[in-house]
Length: 191
Image (cartoon, rainbow, N blue to C red; front, side, top):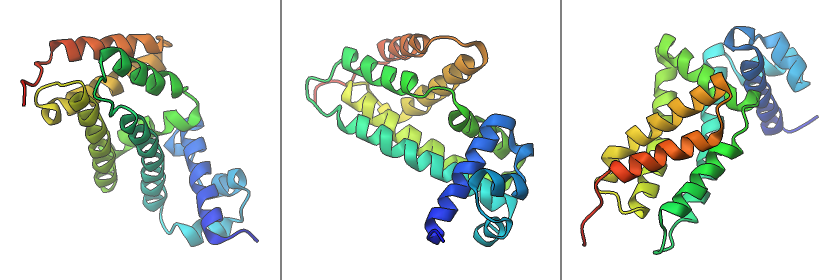
């Protein structure tokens, strides 16, 4: 029998796959058990409510993404960090996130947070992590007031990613849009 943490992780992974493939309405305990290859009782043992399943799945996805994005931001600490390097990082983020079911799921969860206020705190945590990462990159680029502009940069990324999902637009469109944003932003003066 697998350890409880492995079972819990398999359940979360299954929830994200189901949401990405067929939406939140398709998330049932029976389907989760089948997708995760666990007993039906394991699903209810690890997650007492549907809300808990959705919240934990959203937080898990964002924790993984934040680790990945933080590693990318940490790699951008070179004092010679320039707009070209920023474009490469953005291209990695945009191009690296193929729109498989696992990357469609967060969009579904964010929309669900608009319907279910119990998910809003988890969604807010997610966006705070994205804002922090955007601020770090904008800081490296020498953009003035990066914390204030971070939310706009994140909104642009999400909008472009949603557009990309809906239309099949290339990742390069996202890179171009972010480059325009950074060119329009005032730069920080000498310290």
